[in-house]
Length: 151
Image 1 (cartoon, rainbow, N blue to C red):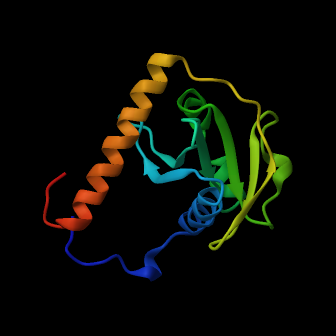
Image 2: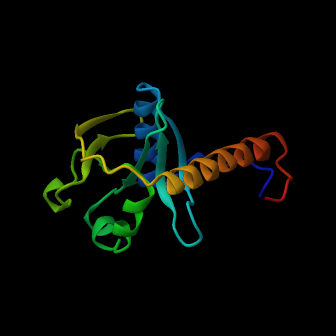
């Protein structure tokens, strides 16, 4: 990890959507982690934890090509109680699968337009994901306080 702050010009469009989603969810008392890895080989754009322990997965798609090239999204369903897509206003939302949530976002805020059905995680999976979420958050905070730390 570098001691230098990331260049704001290097932010990708999906990361800007994620920022708006995280800001919006904070207003609903959710805490979030961007680029969360629930297990090796999987990276969720946003994992959100609600005040009652609910877990939401949000995938941010910046354009049609970004969406159509992602063939692994169904493997993310098993990591949260609800699954959402976050896209901008120009995104062709008719491409998004039925039974998933829809969030319209920009870099500054978002709005939940469609709430997906809740499919509760099994208790053992919930515990494992919650513990991983907590450890991931703690490691990120520690790396901010000690940028030279090897994670």
